[in-house]
Structure formats: structure tokens, C-alpha cells
Image (cartoon, rainbow, N blue to C red; front, side):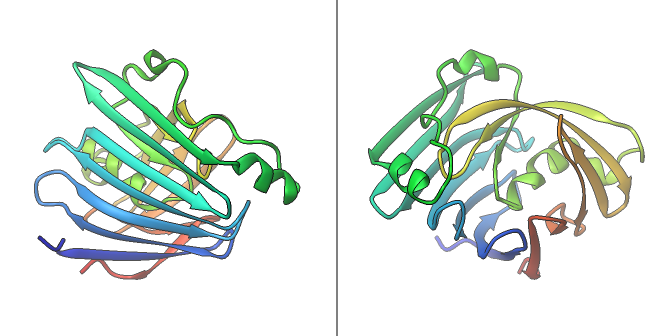
Length: 209
């Protein structure tokens, strides 16, 4: 069946965009595409599903560019993440040709490092901020109270999966701060917890419909 809601963001850091089709009545099911011109031109397609509690159950991602394609799947089973990566072609050759460092291997060498993560993140995506916002009910919780999370973070375009520690703090009825070891950014959201503005990354140009 066609998904009922479409959301579109324009990238503000590099030329690019994100488009997602989703259903969010009983948790989240979404299919989306990221397009970006840097560090090398690529397209990234994702499919994510959560449970009714908005904890992530599965994420499939495929990224592709000139001469290369990569994929990764994360599945939560019995409280532990199973991570499967795949690679075709040579992303490293494309990165070094454009003056960038080589990429990590798609997937994760030790999925046990992800134990305790209930959320997944996808670098360059505005949609994935909604997962912890909805799971923790941040837009309706006490302002200024910090929530420390462990996140299974997927780096794009390499699709390397790493564990990330993040702090999420509601600041206002429509604003949440997310911080890690190196950055802090204040997200503006709509009433459903979908990002309308993530400074330095993306701005929503169509309302969820």
C-alpha cells in the first residue's frame, strides 16, 4: 500500500535533499532517500521500522555512487543487534580521488558495542531525530531535563556502524537540543516530533502531509 505521509528536507550543509514516505500511527515505518554532492556524489536509500514504543526494530540502508555500492542491515533480536554489511566496487578510490580519507568498512566489527541502544541514527538525515524524540516523549516532558542515550549510528556514505553517546534535552514545546562529544545543535520540530529545522544540516520545505 502507498504510504500516507511525505516529508521533504533541503540540505543546508552541502547540495542535497532528503525525501521520506512514512506511516506513524503505530510506531514508525518509513522509506526514504538521501541525496548529497559531498564528500562524493551519492544516493542513500533507507527503510526503517520501529515498534509501537518507537524503539527501532530494523534498518536497511543502501548507498551508491560512481563505481561503488554499499549496504547494511541492522536488526534487533533478543535485545542484541545483528549487523550485516555488504560492498561492491571501490568507494575508497572515489573518496581519495576527491581528496578525502578512506572509508570504514560497512557494518560493525563488534555489534555487542551497540548493546543498550534503542535508537538508530543516520548521518545526514533529519528524519531519524524523530525516533528518540517520540520514544522518550521529549516534546511533552519537563524542560531542561537531559536524557543520555546510546545510539547505533550509521555513517553515510561508508555505512560504517558505530556506537554514539548522545544527550537529548527538551528546551521548549517545539525545540530539543541534541549533543555529543563534539557538537550541540537545537532542533525545531512540529507537533508530531518531525524536524522542521536542524541548523547546519537541513530545513524542511514541505509540511508532513
